[in-house]
Length: 283
Length: 281
Image 1 (tube, chains in turn orange, red):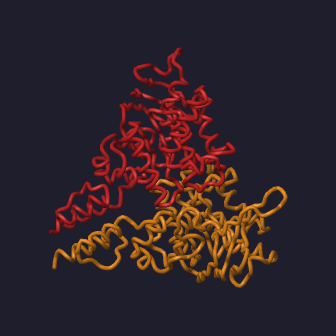
Image 2: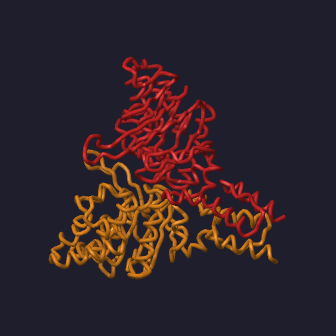
Image 3: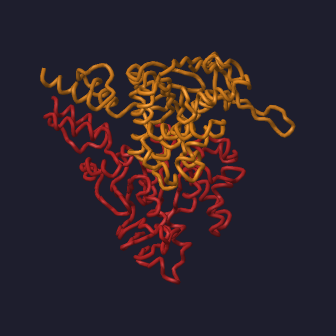
């Protein structure tokens, strides 16, 4: 679905005469292979290249070197642009910057209308998309009065109405309260499981990554670690070196193990640790 | 320097068909030198509340006293209050505008009428307090990383030497290391300068670890105002308000339910680890 082949991207700054002032390598030889239907999470410190990578997936940026393929389509080929952007939608951090219409249903219908979908089908798509994100009841409401989590779900519905195969979310929960965060993560998890939509989630919240199929950890424009959440969160010290963290329970289990308490290798959830400690006590 | 809010009410769209109460009967005393956390879901009234604290929004009824003086009095100098209560908004780095870091930080104190030398001392002191080194003071703010920009923006408020520093979600969008770094910085400013810090946050883990007092706002009302340990004992009520409890507090509750003799009220990883070890051995 999404393939990066030795992708390098440089932000080049030029002075007034057009001479190169400085070059900042944001991506440095990235290889990535995301299969259709995968739930991928990308972790990394501020400035590690996550957002630059995300912007390559729907051709907002194209590589300085190397190639990005979205289902065999090269993102550098301008003839593919419309097709690529329809297949891969993006959700950004601030919900207020992504909503444009005065009614929820108009906002969701904006994308399909823009690419010339017949009116009847637009409404079908709007109804479908709102139902999938659980926002049907707000269809004729103004987006202004929605909570942050609801606004992000409307933004996701707007992308769903384009019938995408892949959704890229760049820190979609950074500005949300705990309930909003939970709503957004539940919504994308369900879209992944039930609709088979490929999800690429960028986040700074370690607990949101626990349900992913595969996690990539970026640092300095490179992918430093990749694997299942369990494989990644084993590397407590390495993650801290990359300015990241692990969920609190994982850290607690890690420290207990250091104190000689027998526990399974990598604990990811509260229930796992409760079960593991409970089993230990019974023995 | 104390700030007292007495029965504050504030309405959006007062007198129109859309009138709705944003703050209902808020009474709050903020004495010297506390580290206070404020939590509440989006739209609960947190931001409206903190904007009352330095007079940016005027209450529809009720009074606010700063050092015993009513701030709504005709002869009260609002500029005094604004100088003493520094407000750092969400994404403060979007408000950086000067050509260099030092000029940006100087803007506040100069604008307040501080003389040049004093203002410069204040600006250098503030930048040092937020950990921005001499190598960066002449750089363009736009060349800095996200975390650095945010610290420069906070320095701009610190340079006005406030007695109360109010921050609206200062860690949003920062990576875990940046988050810890910024919170430790606030803790240090609080401890060394004795500044009252009021931290509005969506991260339960952060307020649990740093705040000494936690205020919960829901539908424009104060629901809890207590030690974080006592507030987070109300897990079900908090969830109903769209909030959460820290993951380690949740863990300890479940372990206690399972029959392990641990302290339910643990707020940090450190406390949880010690309590579990104590219970097992």
